Amino acid sequence: MPTIVVYEVYKKFQREQGNSSGQHFLSSAFGFRERIVPVDIPLAELAAQISIEANLAMADAMIYAAAKLNSATLITSDAHFSGLDFVTLIA
Image (cartoon, rainbow, N blue to C red; front, side, top):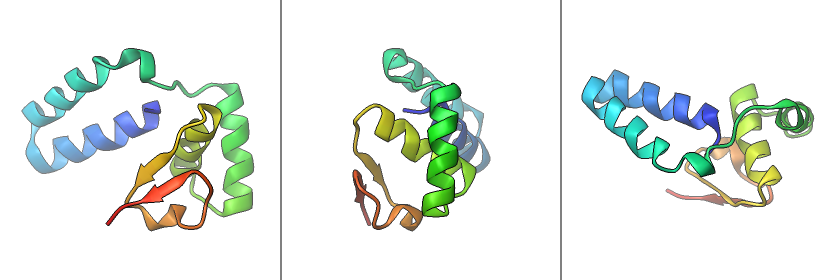
């Protein structure tokens, strides 16, 4: 899970369900600490290339780049990722 996803999900919980839901999510996310993908130079470089090629916003490009760098499938309901390799869209 890229750190940018931690940001997005935490923000959504905080805004829609309040502090305790946000804190619960953080506790769960940090339980998988070894699976947290930090934003570093290789990720930023690949994300910039992806942003240009696939016309993705910065956050989406970083999320997709994190999946690619880790040979992972990105599972999302975000239609911005439609048509990209290694993406599974859910309804």
